Length: 241
Image 1: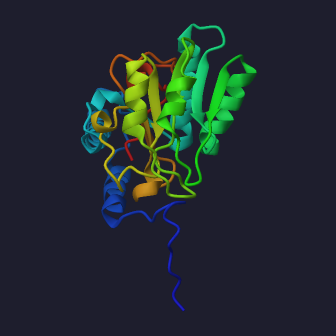
Image 2: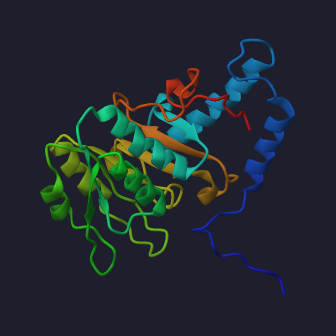
């Protein structure tokens, strides 16, 4: 009997066209994308072409896309970057009680460093009540992070409505859209978020590939310190694969 794979919420197969592009990159993109010589320039072009394609998917500028090793790193970058850049004593974060472990674990870590976290309740279908969010925001709130589509239940949160409340009250908004990008509309301006997490292996890329949308003007502490790669947000030689 032939196996039939249906666990696409966990991970998807690599699409043939993606594999072909990877093969080309592996064979030709051996230069350092930060080098200006004949081998580095094509590698840089591959990286920036990929960045442009991701930006087109989200309807944003390529300079607002930072490549990561996956969704978990992108979530960590968003949460820790805001925490360390906030300059506030006991900065306040808001999330839902149905958040993914890649949100819960970083927030628990930040609590150990002095952050305060409000865990919004969800109803019987897993939905957050936007009115609960409005009531939870305080002058010390630095970030709201609510998952767009839940990986276990499929619940799709009212992100645009929640993000509008946060924006009205002067608070930044992040969504983990790992389960929704490529499946339902996730254009950055339409959902109204300041940061958005993507995980490539949820929509037919290899594992270990992700991105974080960071809206222009948002100040974050770099996730990896070093040279000025990824607009000085994540040091390390970029992968042209």
